[in-house]
Length: 134
Image (tube, rainbow, N blue to C red):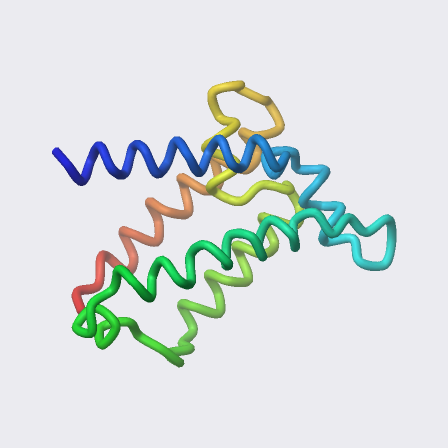
């Protein structure tokens, strides 16, 4: 129960952070990806701020055993295909899963063009690959 409450608090804080930084607005994200047009660097500042908090946090919280289990340098076809699909979906819709879930209660019709394929892809990937055990 303690983990569930902690996850709820962290998720809520993350959602508020996305809303405050306007990263739930797909135009902001697409403005960042439009490097040859009207480029908006806001997303880079948000990512930089997140890294300033998360990197020291993970360094403090992860034990040596946890760090040993983190896979590094494993690039396979599933990673490449998944990354490509994620990037295409993010670029076309302006949403990635975090902001999409944060804005989902607003029931924005255009969001359905992202969330429905996301859920279908998750179900299909789960059926094909299952959950891998380390």
